[in-house]
Length: 281
Ligand code: SER
Image (cartoon, rainbow, N blue to C red):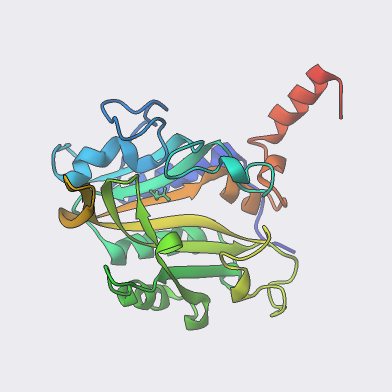
């Protein structure tokens, strides 16, 4: 059985915002779902969208750390979840993303320290249920051994830190824009975390919903641009930065000990109300 007490979606959102505010982050409101001044995006697909020019060094703000709960739509473009909706328990076209951001301030070490502290000390998640992924490197960008070492330094067991390729562990907003290697936290939601047959590395980015990604930490280091001949180039950002994103509905499913996001207090009342209007169960 899970040992922590249940929290509502609103309580989780609030805990996230105030935890990062205590750690020097400015709470910034969610930006509109239609991104302003960005022809590369149809809908806002991540918390970092409203900070794109800050990452690129084209815009200065009076803060270097921010925290948001961003409304997102992923129904087209590079991050398109439409084909997964209804097939998995965890994908939605519309969802809310909790994120902390550093604009040339802290980098990998503090990003990983904050993530660990929030999950283990604040939310009191069991360490034996957590898995971590890091970029294993390819021809363009080398392996992120630093992230691996940092997870182990904060307390992760080395066998729970796994390497993956570009598809899951290198994040970019669209075909162009800020990007970098990323590191994800995955959570085993099954009954017995000590059963090695159930709580297994193969389920991280593997089949089923029992082990699911809850948080993505992007180490923003590059800008991807398109050359006139159509090829793409990678140039370093003015300062290494951090962009993280945790699905509010996913962490709510974890905290409320339910099997799907649809059973959380964020979505279930909407389903029930709709069912009552339609007079169906
Ligand atoms: N931008 C990253 C993502 O959407 C982290 O927020 O996963």
